[in-house]
Length: 139
Image 1 (tube, rainbow, N blue to C red):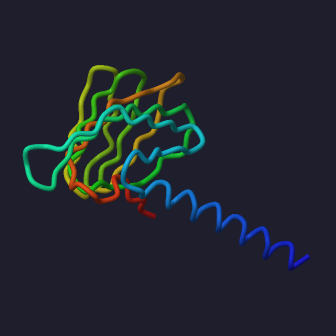
Image 2 (cartoon, helix red, strand yellow):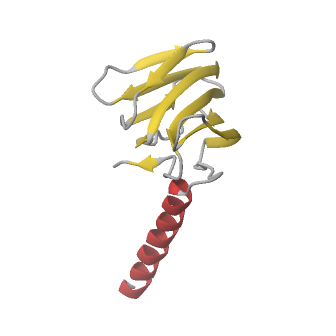
């Protein structure tokens, strides 16, 4: 029985490592987790050396577990639909509805949670350092 548990632990660790690698890749990495869907819409170099802009649609189902993370640049959020609660490091939680916006400074740890009863989605615009992982998970 102990051998089976070791194998289960190894398998779970391997899956987690593969998932983390996918999250921290540069390029068109997709943040995919149960209840969370991310679709990269566009990516362009800026006129500032070493900087790029990325836009993505992020959809969050009710009850999805928030993922604490940070970015190597700023994130500008526009809520497209639903009701999202954002927790930004050092600040009180804020709940936003469709049409409202939020600015997250470079390197600030944050997470988003769908606190409504239906689908919620945001348009995330990142101005980040080119070549760095877009999403860095934080425990």
